[in-house]
Amino acid sequence: MFAYILGFLLILGALWILAIATGWGLPYVLLAHGVQWFKVNPWETTVVAAVLLMLGLLLFMRPHERSDRSFQTSSKGGNVRISQDALQEIIARSATALPNVLHVQSTLRERDAGLQITITCQLEQGESIPKISEELQAKVKEDVELYTGIMVTEVKVLVQRLEKAHLTRAR
Image 1 (cartoon, rainbow, N blue to C red):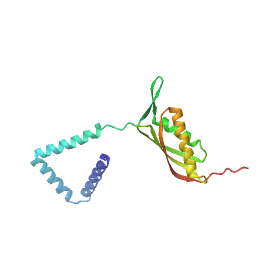
Image 2: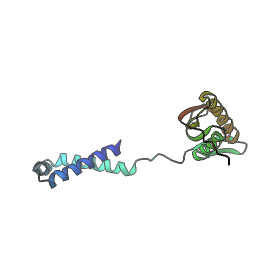
Image 3: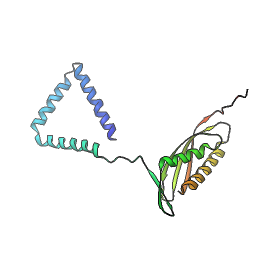
Image 4: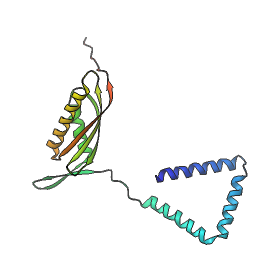
């Protein structure tokens, strides 16, 4: 949200400079009135400066989302954390091992009962989408639970594209 506001202000500033460059008198008048208002109203000017300073500091000090998300599972020796990238790699390998599945992307959500996986995929044309989707859901759920020990509550499949089967020519 803040990026949109900052972008809007930059566009407004560019238009202001463009208006000055083309000889339009209004920006000069507004700027002169604004500076005069700041001189006449020191308390209001201080409040405006404080608000702008706080917004600027928030830009630099705001907490950033962690991109290195991980998911926890238990083992005999203690807790094990598995990165999101590792889980997505397991999902991709599991899904593309199935025939007719060409490309896979996944998103992960942690739920109380386990992990929710959403798979966006590209399939080959010519097969039943519900049949392939069921196989995909079962295979991904089985492999993630087998390799990580993380309980999978749901696997959602979104078929984004269908590709024609690529026939190889024998010579």
